[in-house]
Length: 124
Image (tube, rainbow, N blue to C red; front, side, top):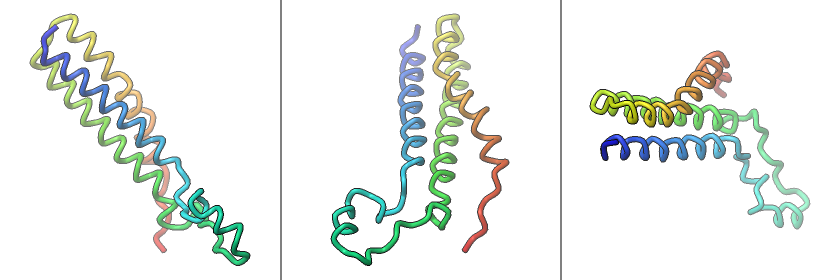
């Protein structure tokens, strides 16, 4: 296996870790008042602001934003694998690069149609 193909496979795995981190980060609660930082303040002050509703903008768009960024990174990873396969097309390189590209392809196949079908909430 060539060093270039090994480097590309390793880089695609690092991109996969980034995609997973973006997916997890996009599921976090975005309201500052619901966080642990202001938990003591909410207990001490009787008229503390209510936590933001997850349907309010921009909180309603956070998951969609992170999903689009994660899908973009996955698409970039697939382009990188395709370029590596053009240059290195031995049987071992094909197997390794195909194996590291598989999770990105599955993510794109599952998440992209779901993201495109979901209507964007109206602004305001």
